[in-house]
Length: 287
Ligand SMILES: [Fe+2]
Ligand SMILES: [Fe+2]
Image 1 (cartoon, rainbow, N blue to C red):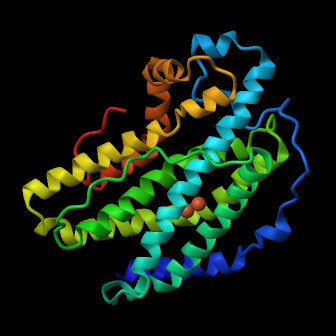
Image 2 (image 1 turned 45 degrees about the horizontal axis):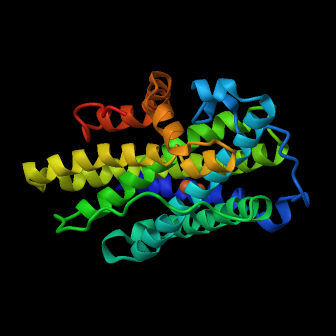
């Protein structure tokens, strides 16, 4: 507990120092030409497929624009449910120590949606619909629901952050796309420190009292959530908008390619290692 409150103090101080006003900071051009990269080609979901190789570069660039709209949209959906869950936990009796940081967390996630949403609505006129199915609620053992909430947040943010880091350093991308990735990464670096600590602490605090059945369910849920998170990166609406004739076939080919599987594994590596090291998972999920 001591270690967590020291971390919270440090993270709060950093959030105050790095406090931004997204309305002043962002410079939005009236229009964006789609003849440029918005998403790193190697990270695009169709990269490595025959379909992708057969596209002229102008089409690949158009695809990179819609991949960006998808990436920003899935962040908005994740952040919306994150904000809901954080707000519900604010000033709860058993975790008052978290409150000062939850205020920053809420504030920062709201700002992320302002710039993600600002980009999508200005330049695409839309946000893609959410495809992740809500998982059924059930009876939870003590601490289990909080643990699963923060574990899901962590998985989601760990994967996003790998993309943010790589794309913020990719000078082929349009400066606005790079800036958004960089701004997001700066806040997420703190959220990840908090996330790893709270997930580990909740697990240590409660898991010994859970039944074997609950423990098994928790582990299965984490693996399923990782897979569900990844499936959102392959969005047929993106392919349709980029002019792909058979968007569902494209999705299947991309998801099933060996290259994509390796890439999912590589990008999830840091996150999976954390769950294995802490004993939360016993085996790495197949992605
Ligand atoms: Fe965020
Ligand atoms: Fe975050």
